Amino acid sequence: METVNVTVRMERQTRDDAAKLFSELGIGTTQAINMFLKQAVREQSIPFEVTARPTVERDRENMEK
Image (cartoon, rainbow, N blue to C red; front, side):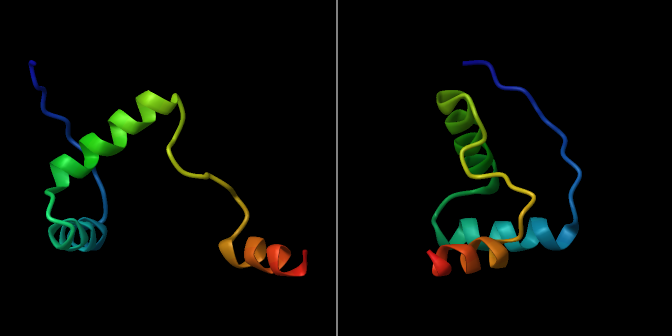
């Protein structure tokens, strides 16, 4: 399968933190990005919840239920 190069701009700290995590998981950053993209295509959506509500607010609501 043909591959292409993709350029992404991000904060250096985010890149470094992600690379450290992926290394601990035994995968490279390229592999992790490919996994994300393939999952998004498979699900036809972003493969995690995207919300404008802070996590703390959602957790507080869940605890009240």
